[in-house]
Amino acid sequence: MPERGSMHWERSSPELTARFQAFTATIDGLTQRKMFGETAGFVNGNMVTGLHNGNWFVRLPEEQQAELRALPGSGAFEPMAGRPMRGYVVLPPHIVADDAALRPWIERAVAFGRSLPAKG
Figure 1: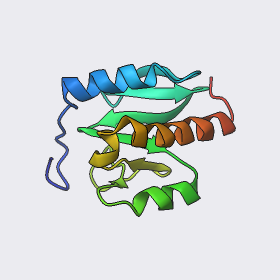
Figure 2: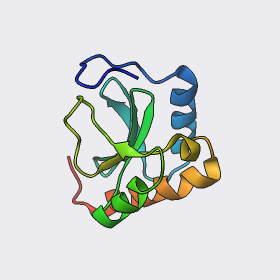
Figure 3: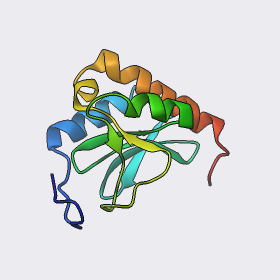
Figure 4: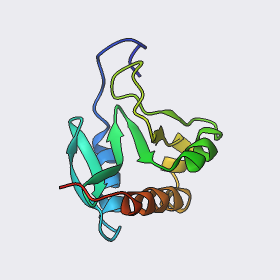
C-alpha cells in the first residue's frame, strides 16, 4: 500500500482484475471500461464499482455507505491520497474474497446506479 500523501499507486493484481472482470460480467446491464487505469463497472453511464490500487470499491446511497464503513477493513475510496470520492467505499478484503458476501454489495451498487440519471 502506498504511503499516505504519496501519488504512487500500484495496479491491482492480475488475479484480482480477472476476478473483477469475470464477476461483474455476470451482472445484467453492467458494462466494463477503464477508469483510473484499471477496470470499472458502469450502469447507465454511472460508475458503480471498480478496482484501484488493489482495492475493490462500490458506489452506494448514503445509508448503505455507513453500513459498509462500519465493517472492519472498509474505507474511503481515494483515487488521490487525501481526496476521497464522495459516494464510494472500499470493500473489506474478507468480503472481496467471498463471492457470497460480495454479490449483495455489488447488487446494491448496481441498483443505486440504476436509480441515478443516465449519463451519455
